[in-house]
Amino acid sequence: MSLIVVSGAPGAGKSTIAAVIAASLGWPLLALDTIKETLADVLGLGDEDWSGRLGDAAAEIVFRQSAQFGAAVAEGWWRGERRERALREFAGAVEVFCRCDPQTAAQRMRGRHGAGRHPIHRDVINPSIVAGAAALAASVTPLRLGAALVDVDTGQPGAPAAALTAVAAALGR
Image (cartoon, rainbow, N blue to C red; front, top):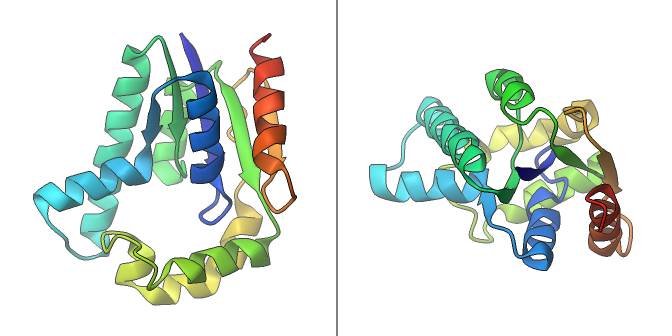
């Protein structure tokens, strides 16, 4: 199995980097937020607890589907119990850790509001979460899954291309 796990804090640029990698490799993208949003569209919206439960369900889908594909890109913020599970399920995978200046991550999170962000996300349900975005971004660390760790500063010009080059090298391509 060839698995690339794209991780990082909210607002760190994970979705952008993961989409570039998946498209370039022709691999399926298992994006935690997309799955969570789809579940909410079918099952309905709710409070922060419901958002967390749908996030856990989405993570479970990513874990199971990533084990089924011969090659895939799994993207998400692996926090709390999900982090512990990700360490087990994704052991040995290449990790692309997305980071940026914490203030940039906070600015990106603020920019999502009113720009079509799905209402199932906790930061939409409780906008006060955004106030702690910079501190959160500063605290998130790589999973360290045992294979190559590609560290990408998404605040730098050319970050997607640099990530893709590093992933290709990690895969021996």
